[in-house]
Length: 157
Ligand SMILES: [Zn+2]
Ligand SMILES: [Zn+2]
Image 1 (cartoon, helix red, strand yellow):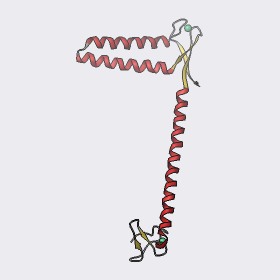
Image 2 (image 1 turned 135 degrees about the horizontal axis):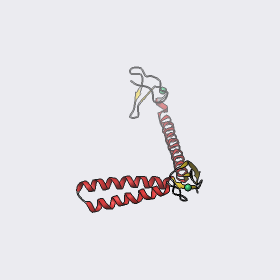
Image 3 (image 1 turned 45 degrees about the vertical axis):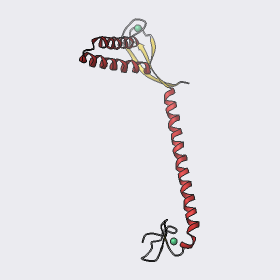
Image 4 (image 1 turned 120 degrees about the horizontal axis):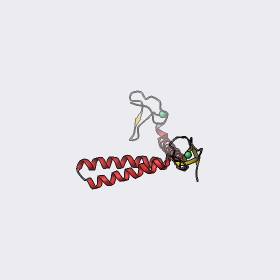
């Protein structure tokens, strides 16, 4: 014997009633229909509460993601030679960096498999990404690579 479904009282041997739903004490057994309805209602409420919380959590997550997407990170660089200040988007540099890596990787693997045309093309892509990156990382005024930088963040629209 287990516990009574209605009052959760521990049932002694042969003291309770057994139904398809579970076991009942002699007090709860006559009221089992009512109790079951109440239990079911509670369960539905709990489920919808959990669902609601889940939904709220998801909404919050999405909002945060959207906010993160709107945040623009930018390098603010100052040339140590001529004092020129310029800006460069972090996302663009990141893309160039990952593009360089990817193309270098493709270049390497195709070189290994003997497809030299593709390999050369990938290396060229890697090279142009690298060039572009180098351009962003030198003073547009005097071409110096001696600069100080800080990463700034602002929320775009
Ligand atoms: Zn009971
Ligand atoms: Zn400069």
